[in-house]
Length: 97
Image 1 (cartoon, one colour):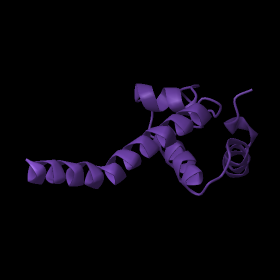
Image 2 (cartoon, one colour):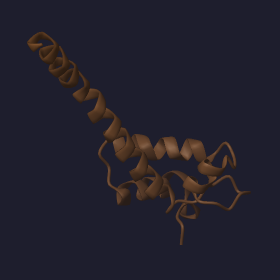
Image 3 (tube, rainbow, N blue to C red):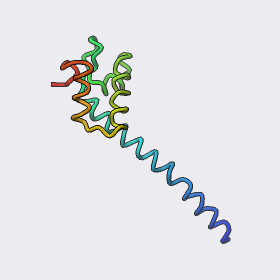
């Protein structure tokens, strides 16, 4: 019985990095979605926010913008810094008023 207990404990310990990574990815996705609600899709036709456009499968531009947001988050940038970079890349039209 002790051997089974040790195997179970080792199995749980081995899963900790995987579980941690999943919760981290979920937090990153949630942060990206929040920021994406404050940035316009710049395709010029849909008139949606990045998050709404990506969620609704609106166009092929918003997923690129969302990837940009996620990369910036992975570098440790704040929402304000990401919004600033979006304006630098896409112009003032990128920001939701």
